[in-house]
Length: 109
Figure 1 (spheres, rainbow, N blue to C red):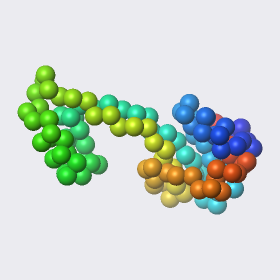
Figure 2 (figure 1 turned 60 degrees about the vertical axis):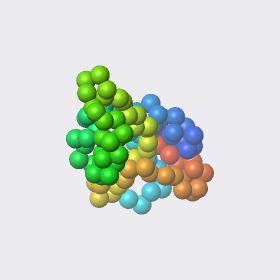
Figure 3 (figure 1 turned 120 degrees about the vertical axis):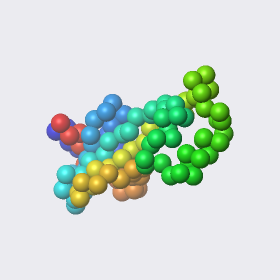
């Protein structure tokens, strides 16, 4: 484990696909990771269970008719997630000011 990093150093590591954490966090086994960007065809997007029906309806109506020749890509941009102490995944994790100024960031091996 690489320890005593700044937030900037930790962010660079997470962009390389590494897991980062803070020694000062109270929760056990918590870490941050990055979900990379992904481009998904509209026809595939309609089958994603974790998207609301309103989002799917929007894209289905916008690109009708969806065919082999008309199946555009929708880009999901990268974002940070946290694996919480209770093993849930927090999508769209945001660092607090305390997190950003801390010097106890580490890279998990």
